[in-house]
Image (cartoon, rainbow, N blue to C red; front, side, top):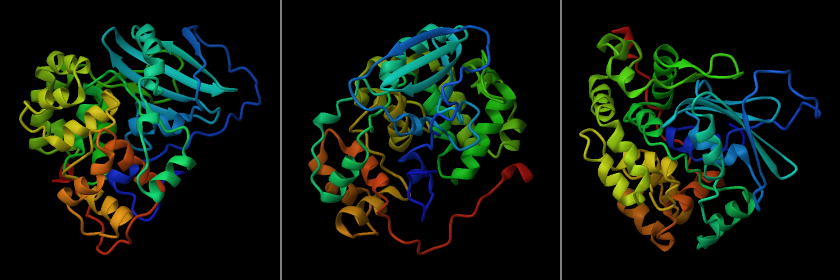
Length: 337
């Protein structure tokens, strides 16, 4: 979890940070020959930090859809409108190289610039606090990713409702590995593509239970995948309208919809409300108030209207968090019942 603060690795703080992507250790030696895929090279006019931009897309260190490898590359799998695909992204000398395999390869390469922040406008952000300004200065590569896919961010966000990080990551890992499909191309071992909507709908109740997912969260996912097409259409909407559409599904509230559009849309202003830890972190960082609630957090972030999510993310990256006062939330496992 390099680059993240360590005292309190909660679900919120893990999402706010940076995935440690190793420096290219290959020494310039070409990788072993593999089945050819589609390729694309792109030179962005800003410094690229793959771990910082793509970090929010990883759901835990064992996420079967995300891998950072020792050669300095990031691998992702996605279920695109064209089908399953695997994407490998690397950056060297200011040039980004994308390689993709599977039916969704062309779609993934077309989306590559936006996934790395081309649709984001960090210049629109003006720091109002010294802590935020320092965090921004130290993280010049921070841009907000835009995946263009709703369901791949919505489902793990639903799994993360009201449980510990470990429980949610375990459920995502087990369900994707068991019901997803192997990643196309020469992906690292045990990478998978998340299940199609119909496959999610056919998962038996006992498999949700074994994965530690209670009926409420499982039912929310089942309702969402039944209208997957309509939810994916929200990519073409403004983030606020997209959140409103997602929240029409029973069980999806402001917390889940915000967590989704932050990734699918690169929504700079969709601040997460209803979180257990974020208000206290923001309150402590900006006003020394560790007991802040959502209303206090939103008031503190008001000077950043239009950029509140970016401000919250920089605060998370700053490392200024209150010391823990109570034991961690105990981990449960309903699969053992």
